[in-house]
Image 1 (cartoon, rainbow, N blue to C red):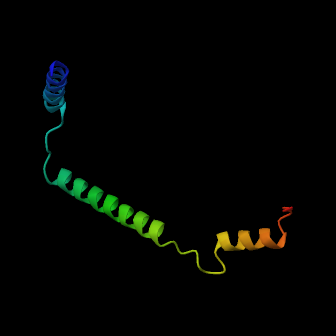
Image 2: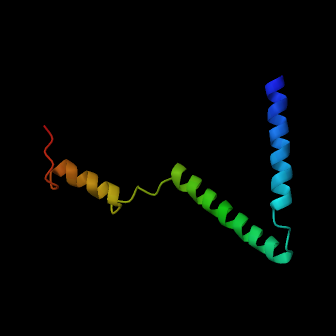
Image 3: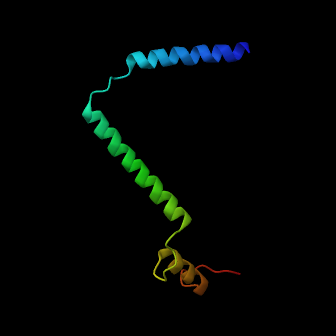
Length: 81
């Protein structure tokens, strides 16, 4: 338990230190910046998950299919034995 209480003391000291040195809320500008940042992160996360779960690789013109087809036909100079 002694190690846990030491950890809590360090965490409390860090919180006091960071709170004293953190910039104060400057007003509407900070809120707008935070809102835009949240929207960008949310859209990025959504698109990342969407294309990870449902990749658009089913068209014949997709680069992955073209490379795999070339390798199967031996047009890339790769020899499979």
